[in-house]
Image 1 (tube, rainbow, N blue to C red):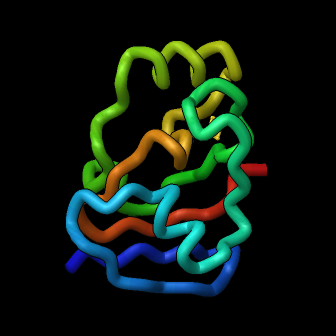
Image 2 (image 1 turned 90 degrees about the vertical axis):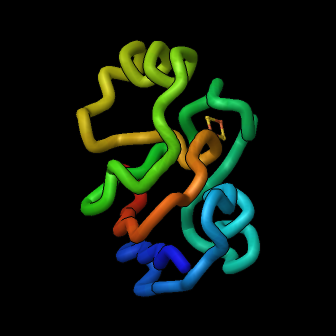
Image 3 (image 1 turned 60 degrees about the horizontal axis):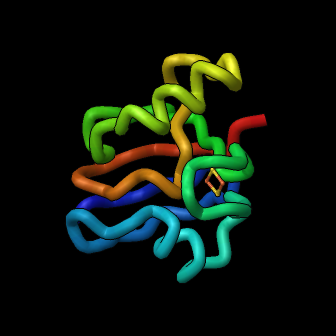
Length: 93
Ligand code: FES
């Protein structure tokens, strides 16, 4: 099972493959915050320290939004990600 580590919370958990990251964050009450839950507010921005390739690919809407926010290449919106393999994440400041 894929392992998700959130360094900000000092937490590592195993989840089912393709499990939505937002559900995992809510299951474990992590410090990743959510607002719209639909890729439109940016509240859930995360930095992917390892395993970017193990998150579901970025859709066009997420890409457009991150561009608007001038996000860096290692940033994603947690509400738009499903977990496909091991990842290490931190809350984006
Ligand atoms: S919760 Fe709004 S963009 Fe993810």
